[in-house]
Image (tube, rainbow, N blue to C red):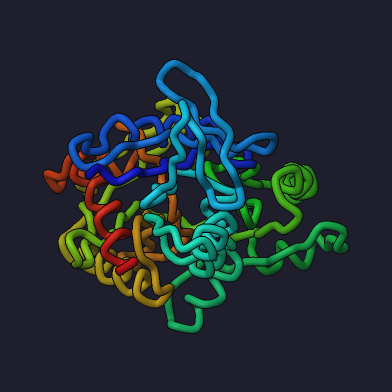
Length: 327
């Protein structure tokens, strides 16, 4: 008998439209002989299953089920394709864990921790992982431009602490640009991070659990046409994503070792894709994405393709790992 799989997509953040694209790709590539997939849109104003004819069926939030054409449908597993809140920050996963429904992501605490850039950096710093210098601000806090720039220098990056897809990020070159950049970041989040600029090669590394083993996918080098890897570079073709990265074997080995170590330190499971800057051959950790883009053009699927892994295999593995974990 086929397993019912709820592919959750959408969410409550600026990334909702991107998430629906990712979720639709998962829907298209799940093994239809083993699974009955359902597209579940989790939005601020409604939770609904959307069928292939665009009919909507409301979700019963008491047990995460749907009544559809006289059938009561419950789910064997949830495939999490929500970028941002409430999928990537763990909020909705705590709900599934209470209901006892397996899901494809790490446990909700790990997701909440890794979504918070400051807290992730604080944990990793204690393990000796190389990171940029940073200053953290809460909304309403007094802003002392001089002391911030004394610590991080120029240029620097201002970014929301809990947001993805490069929304709200600015690269600041002059002291006069700092306050406007902070105000822009506060539009996305009430907590922000200001980080020193690291000059070097940017790489992205996917680490997943594949058939019960930890697997580091081929490393991708990111060359942005824009000033940094911003929204346009990520989603509108304004970057080159080169897999495998044009780095030395020694650098690749270091990046893989750090990526594996971070996955273990953070007690991750499921998908992850982390960004690093190689400064004089040393990987400096930037951030980790636990619900990375899953469209055909997204970086993690490109990495999987370079490892001769199809989307069909990648997604099937994610569901199987989640089902196995629940037993």
